[in-house]
Length: 459
View 1 (cartoon, helix red, strand yellow):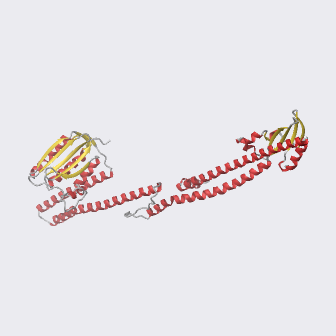
View 2 (tube, one colour):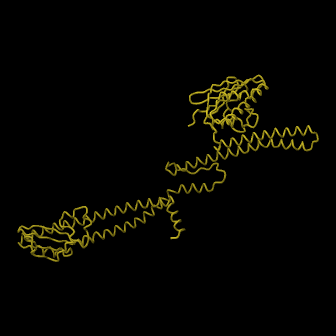
View 3 (tube, rainbow, N blue to C red):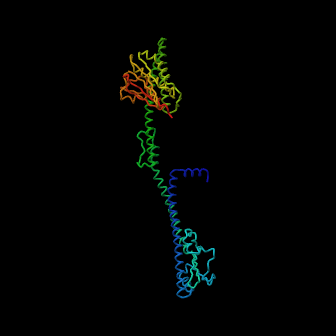
C-alpha cells in the first residue's frame, strides 16, 4: 500500500462516524458470534448426551438379552444389526482377557471417553470429532464384562452441519451489523451535518442564526446549545464592535475637521497672530486626539486581556494625598473645595492604571461642579477589599442613566457629559481588570458618588 493510500485509510479510520459505525457493528457482531458459539456448544453437549443415552440403552439391551437367552452374542449381534449406521463395536472380557470381539476395536488414541462421566464434562465438547469413539462397560450376571465402542462420527457430523449453519448466520449477521452500524452512525451524526451545513452558509453577520435543537439533552444537543451560545456571543460582540467603531469614527471626525478648518484659515491668512492662534488650536486639538486614541487603545488592551497588570505594593494613603495635592490648584482655580479622607493602607495594584482611573474621575467631578461646590475623595480598608469613592455636590445623575453612564461614547439627554465619554468607561474597565466593581449612587454631598472596590487578594 502506498503512503498516500495508507494516510487516506488512517484518516478514514480516524473519523468519528467510521469509529461509531465500527463500534456499533462490531458490538452487534460480537454478540451474535457469542450467541452462535454458545448455541454450537449447547448443540455439541446435546449430541454427547445423546451418545451417552444411546450407550446406556445399548448396554442395558445387551444385559437383558444375555439374561433371557443366556448368550451375549445374540444380544450384541442384534444391537449391531439394528444400529449399523452408528458402527457400534463390542468385545467380551472374562478375567481381564478379551474372549471375543465384534468388529474392529478402535485404537487407544481414538478413544475420546472411556467412561460415561467423561461425556458430561464441560471440556467434553473437544471430544466430539468424527474419528473419536466413546467406550461403555457393563458387568453381566455371569461375571463377564462387555464393552461397547460407539463411533462419534454421526454425532460430530450433526454438530458440524449445525456449526456451518451458525457460521453462515454469523456472516450474514456481520453484514447486517455493518449496515446497522453505518445507518446508526449516519442518523447519530445527522444533526451535526445539518449544523455544519448551516454554519457554512453563514456570512459575516450571524444575527438571528440559531442551530436547531431537538431538546434531547444528549451530547449532540448540548453541542448545539453551546454553538448557539457562541453564535449569540459573536453576534453581541460584532454589534458592539460595529457600534464602537462608528462612535469612535464620529468622535475622531470632529477634531480632525477642526484641525483641517483651522489649517485652511491659517494657510490663507497673513497675520502672524492669527497663524499663531491657529497653530495653538491645532496643537490643543492634537493633544485631545492623542488622549482619545490612547484611551481607545487602553480600553482595547484591557477588553482583550492583552495588557498584564504591572502590580506593585502601593501606599494608597500617600498616593491619594499626592494626587489630591496635584489637582488642588485646578479645583481652587474653579473655586471648588477638594477634600481627602483615606485610611486604606497598602494594596498590590497597577499604579499606572489607578493613576488613570483617579485622574478620569477627578476631571469628571471638576466638569460637573460649579464655583462654591465641593468634591471629596475617600478610601477605606476592610478585611477583603479596599473601597474608594469620589463625591461631588453637583447636579447628580438620574437613576435611569446610572448603568449606561459607564458605556463608551454615552450620548443622552439625561446626562450632560463633557469630553468624549470615555472617562467612566475606562474607569470601569480598570476596576474590573483588578477584579473589582464600580457603580454610581447618590452622594452625601448632594450630587453623585462614584464608588468602587478592589479586592485585597486576587489569588
